[in-house]
Length: 253
Ligand SMILES: [Zn+2]
Ligand SMILES: [Zn+2]
Image (cartoon, rainbow, N blue to C red; front, side, top):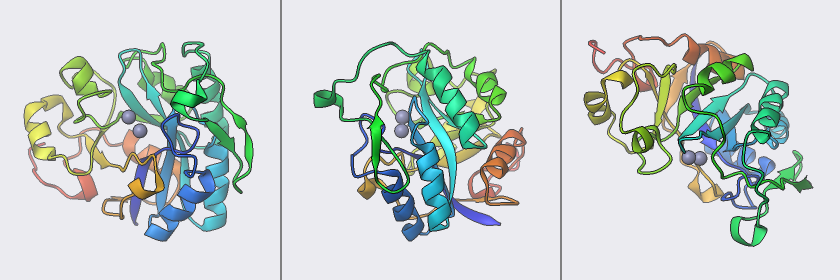
């Protein structure tokens, strides 16, 4: 089935996320927009994922528990997990592997932990927009240990991206997908970075405010509308000759 997706959305837990971006609000907005499946990917934490998954169950939209992990090289990597338990276990590991710097709410915002019905359960005290101690090379295997899959975020951005930090798409990076911002020209990246060829290209909003959510435009053809189906699809991608939307744009990839 063709499913409209957005696998990169922040909630009010992210220091740069708007406090109106509650799990309830973002999930219901995505449902209204017409998405079938979304992922909640706060910076270095999955503490709002359970609320978002529950809000999704109530709203009738699938929510994949996720995280936007910042590596030691300051590369953002989207990590997706099959269930909240494993996402939260990974989140606890990451919390032990980020600098013990306290959040300053007057500068970075509140980092709210919520339930699925807009109740504030607490706040995250550690600042979440720091670089973790994990290098980008070790993240794919680490995420796999928790049943998940990962891909580098917004590789076309001038900061916090694989290419801005390393200057290239490393051929030995064990990922089967990467993310481009919605309007980036895929073919120019594939021409410039041969290691990116054959990988699945994902396009996500990276919304931090409700008004950043985009109308659904990109689909994946999945056998089921579930977190596990997304993870299996990306894991089994290898070097198939399709690119975004399941279309083949060049059989030589
Ligand atoms: Zn990012
Ligand atoms: Zn982001």
